[in-house]
Image 1 (cartoon, rainbow, N blue to C red):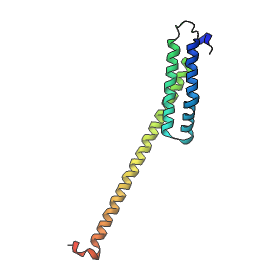
Image 2 (cartoon, helix red, strand yellow):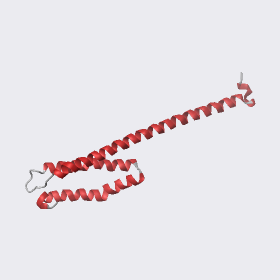
Image 3 (cartoon, rainbow, N blue to C red):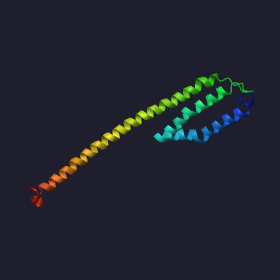
Image 4 (cartoon, helix red, strand yellow):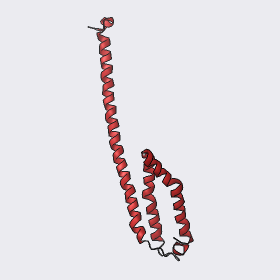
Length: 137
């Protein structure tokens, strides 16, 4: 939007967010999506929740500012949807991670039982060997 609609400060504000998106957010989101990296994807989705809330709050709070004549109706519709999408995706990742951690813990428990059984068998074999007859009663 032009300075006639959102003032010079508004233009600077929107350009700042656009630059931040271009330099950091878009590459981070792309990296997270392309590599399935949960940390990068979660960070990008956190931004997806945060920045629409900030922009919407700024647009609503600037309604009464002199020279501000932006119609914020589209923002009231689109920005909450973006935040909800980001939050929904974060919840899906959280659920997926919990399931993954459950599988990791389950596998670790199975491995621990396998190692315990193997160790017990090795000890029992050693105790039964003819070279260790002195250990038998």
